Picture 1 (cartoon, rainbow, N blue to C red):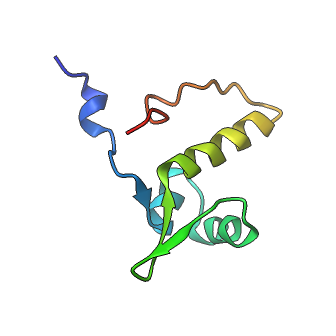
Picture 2: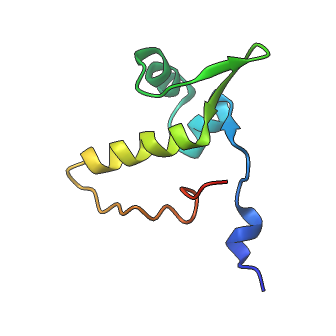
Length: 83
């Protein structure tokens, strides 16, 4: 029997800026600052800015590890697994 969270797992390999901002609980403006500074890599495809899921996960891991209050582990609920 499949786990309930498996049914909700997002299998996309890339997100638009608005989706990425929502996923990491940041404002759209904050996300664009991360993109502009190069902290969060992105690319354009067909005129649309995209952020690879792996890049978004690496960005969050880096922020978590750098946080003084971090209790983060490498387990992100399965979202860090290869597609």
